[in-house]
Length: 249
Ligand SMILES: Cc1cc2nc3c(=O)[nH]c(=O)nc-3n(C[C@H](O)[C@H](O)[C@H](O)COP(=O)(O)OP(=O)(O)OC[C@H]3O[C@@H](n4cnc5c(N)ncnc54)[C@H](O)[C@@H]3O)c2cc1C
Image (cartoon, rainbow, N blue to C red):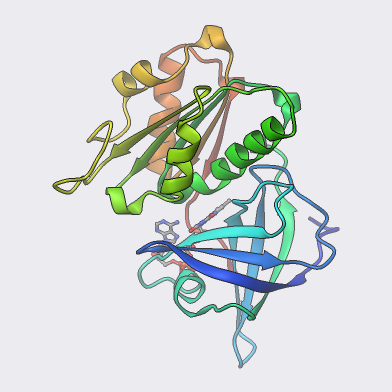
C-alpha cells in the first residue's frame, strides 16, 4: 500500500448496467496493470475539502482498453449514489491501486474456475471471466468455468447479455438464483444459495477447481460453508466480502 499513489482517472463512459447499478469506464494515465479480482480505492473530495473513500473491484480484464468499475447504489450512501447518479463522461475522480494479492486469479492458479457471486460481488468475477475469454481468443488453454450468481430479481443481474453470450460456450455454465424473484422472472433457482443447489451445479472436490466467492457477508458465509460441506479443501476457496468499506481518507 505504501507505494500506491493517487491517480486522476478520466471517465470515458458511464452506462446503466441495471436500474440500480452503473458501469464506469475510466482512462488512467500510467496505470500499472492489474490481475483479475483486484480492486481500487476511489476518493471523492467535496468543495469544502471533505473526503470520502471506498473500495471498488475492477470488472475489466487486464488487457481491456479501459478500467471498468461497476457500482451498485446503496440507498442513503455517501459515495455510491454520486458514482451511479451524478458522474458523467469527462469527469475526473481519484483512485489508487491495484490492491489485493489474495482474491486474484491468473493462469498459474489454473482451473477449472468455480465462481459464486452474490449481487455486486459479480464485479471481480466478471474480470476473471473476461480474462479467461481473452486468453482463449489469444489461442491459450480453454479453462472451463461455472458461475452461480445470486441476485434479488432478474433486473438486478449485472452483465446479463455478456453472461448469456459466455454461456453459449460449452466450456462455460451460468446459473441464476433469484432470492426475490418477480412474476415472469427467468431463474434456475428461486431461493438463497444452499447445499443442494451447489451439489447440482458445482464441480466436486475431485475436479480441484479454483473457487472464488464474492458478495455480502451472509452470502459468503453460506456459500463457503456449503462448499466445505461438499468436501472442497479450504485452501482452494478464496472469498471476498463486500461489506461497508472506507470512511474518511
Ligand atoms: C473489497 C471491496 C470491494 C468492493 N467492490 C464493490 C464493487 O465492485 N461494486 C460495488 O457496488 N460496491 C463494492 N464494494 C462496496 C463499496 O466499497 C461501498 O461500501 C458501497 O458502494 C457503499 O458505499 P456508500 O458510501 O454509498 O455507503 P456508506 O455511506 O458507506 O453506507 C451507507 C449505509 O449502507 C450500508 N452499506 C454500506 N455498504 C454496503 C453494502 N455494500 N451493502 C449493503 N449495505 C451497505 C452502511 O452500513 C450504511 O448503513 C466493495 C467493498 C469492498 C470492501
